[in-house]
Image 1: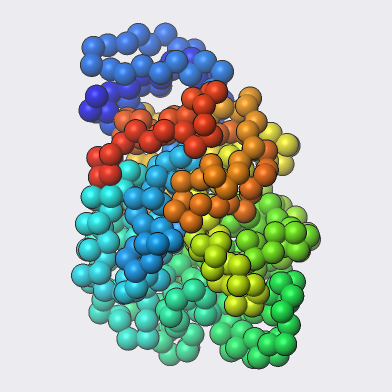
Image 2: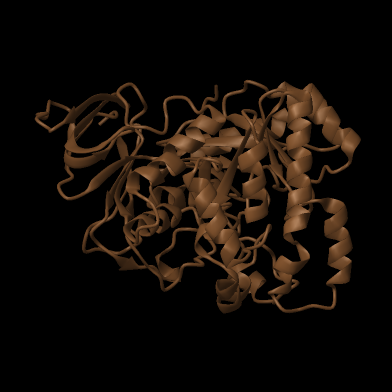
Length: 450
């Protein structure tokens, strides 16, 4: 009803405390937070009784690959946003390695227009850097829906690559906003790929794309940021060596992120899951996973993402090294992290700080990330008491599988709410997939960035 919603009897996860109470959304905006409750319904207002449930800000996933345009057999903006909504994610930032790549204003305008027709959640998009598109990068600065510049310093999925020093210097010196880097050293990567060509065991992936490959590029990117006084975000951090170095050296200009799967899996899981766990940079080792947790908790790592990068199981089944790298994850990231919280790895407030507040702060996303009066009514109501086992058939992603198949997770969203409107709901005794509520294009807006 036009974003008018009252949630009663919830456990509210506020920025500074967790408390029982009510929350009202008026016209899509959080208008009243009432610790202790006591709010009564008014006319034209939907009401949700959240007794026994936790109310969180909607999660923000600032690193997804929704594959549109070009590869909509794997994902498109509707299916990806549906999956996001099913997982309590109310905003996403989509990467530029599409077909065609999003490397100019016209391509970004088309993606934003498509999202306006198809997405059920809020959305933003990166523009991809090339060796010679400085003018294009400059043309989208301050544009609604454009969150920053993505540089692939090392080869990954797609053909976007900028690794020569002169071109990197040009981008850092002559653009504004935030630069997000896929930090792997291309020269070392190419050299080691040739050296490891005879290996077909999946364990060799992390040996080939080793820690030094990532560390060289991370140090180089930080140096460029400091030399040019430019905001830098290092995406999908994977190693303890990098995390420990950033703890000492990142300063105020640099932020970073970690993927849910790098906090969950290690080398044993790669052996067990095979190509399902194949991604770039790789899942590494137990000691790396433990270091990433430590640096997440001490604030070195600013936020949690998924790098949702769907490929079909048919494509994956060709086997390593020919299997494509990447896995889906946008609809399981919040339950996975809330399961970690239930198991004592962190608190629910930590999860909100890393998955809601952190991405909003890193990218300057306006009016998002916290339960604060005046912020947008982007919310998720989760059940921390019910554990459910997810299977491939429970997923909304178009590729129809999850690396967490067979795992028992808690914290499944009962309601996902965008601007005060329910876009996805899940009955306590119903299907784990839940029920989509919003029509394509009826919810979600292009995000604005400060």
